[in-house]
Each structure stands twice: as C-alpha cells, then as structure tokens.
Length: 316
Image (cartoon, rainbow, N blue to C red; front, side):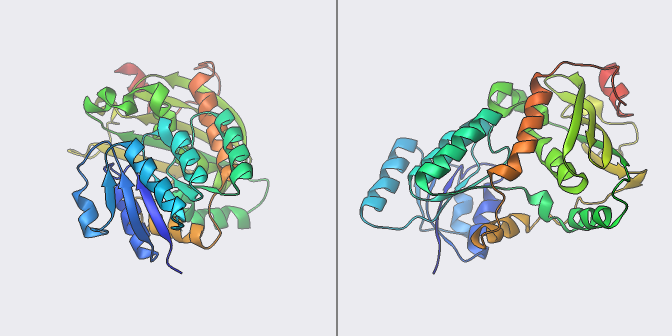
C-alpha cells in the first residue's frame, strides 16, 4: 500500500533530499508547509501536493483530512532545529510517525517528553542519521568490530565549512535556536563516532565561540581531537587554493574518505523507516546529551589533547 506523507520545511536547503526520498520509496506527498514560498522544486516531484505558508492553515487541513478518514502515514520534518520538537509533536498527534532531521531536539529533557508522547499516541519518531548508512562508515565500523576489542584508535576530526554573514543573521547563528556550532554542524559527526567506536566516556571543551568550537573526546575505542568552524579565516594553511571547505577525518594518521556517496542516503534512511529499521529516540540520546554538555560545560583548554588546527582558530 502506498504511504502518504506531508513535509514541514519544504523550502529549506535539505528539503529536496526529502522530496527525492519520498518519491523513490514509492510514497505520495499530499501536502507541504513552509513560511517561505520558494518551493518550485516541488513541481519536479509532487506537483499536485497542497502547499501552505501558514502553519495554522496547514494544521487545519491535516486534521480535516483525518476527520474525513484520510490516512497520513509520515510527517517529514526539515524545519529549523528549535522547531523540531513542536513539529514532531504535531506529527504524532496527527496519527503519523515522524521522520526528522538532526539534531532531533536541542535538550536531553526534550527526549523524555517525546518518549512520553510516543507512548501516549502509539506513534514513532525516527531521526535522519545518514552517516550510519554511508558505505565508508559502515566499512569502518566493521573493521573496528573485527579488530582487537582493547585497541584504542587516535582520531582527528577537522571540519571547516565557510559561511557568510547571512549565517549569523539567520536562526542558525542563534545558539538558542540552532544549539550552536557543535549541535548544528557537529552532531552527526559525534553520532557517527559513537556508532563506530562505542559509547562516549568523557568530553572536554577546549574552545567555544559563535563561529568555532573544539575539544577532546574519549569513546570506548577512540581518542578524538576535534575542531569545527564556519569562519573562512580559520581554514587550515594546507587547504587547496580557492576551496572554501576543508573536511578531514584521520584514524591513526590514515585519512578516511567519505565526501562522496551522500546522494542517496536520505532515500536509504526513508526506506529503513518503512522497513521498521529507523533510528529512534534511544539511538539519538547519546549525541544529544553530548552536544548539550559541549554547549554548556566548562572550557578547559589545558585538559586533553588539542586538535593541531585549533592553533589557527585561536590565533585569528
């Protein structure tokens, strides 16, 4: 039976991946919502889907359909981070399961409320954690699992993705709405690291600012030095000329290449949900707790090992 979807956040950057995924898993998008009306991309996927720019009208339509006995199976959510909780609540109270972008919520206590709502409604929340499905990451996890259980790997994670002044003027630049750099950009990396190397044991924050963050993590089988930045001036000196992004993950000095292969990961994520293999609240909790600690914990630059590119960030 074809599954019926609606999408919240249809004008956002990541929305086309959700539209593509819904179509490729054989679903039908019946309605979509966004404050902005730049959603012409919908014509390439679901030209007949209803579209709303006011949430009240969107909500009214969805509940009217429900009263007529029309089935809604899933609500895709790719709205701003601080709205995820409200939109997941809407999905479950609409009688649908939620498929939500990361970070699922901003605070660990939000997860407790979502668990209670799942129990109340009998519906389920699923998180998009596409790195867990990336072939290179899956292969790395298998390699670590096949190796000695007491081996500790040394990992360096550096992610520099330049953003213009628009970033700070948008909700993404407001830590109260995005959760800050470590949450908005780093959460899927932290989840990936725990997926590969086991549970988090400790975390130290070396640096925290509006445009960058850095620290040191210990997982069951890894020591991780990390740095994240959206400031173009922080790009490492070894970044190729003209390149505005530098992403590097090394394990025991060996570079892990996973820049490609992202095209179909949302489709794989959606298919996993339809197959009953989605990533639920229990899977998400460790990374949400970690980014909350990074956001609020003490800054201790002298504790743990610093990422080698942090000196450039601090020196700017």
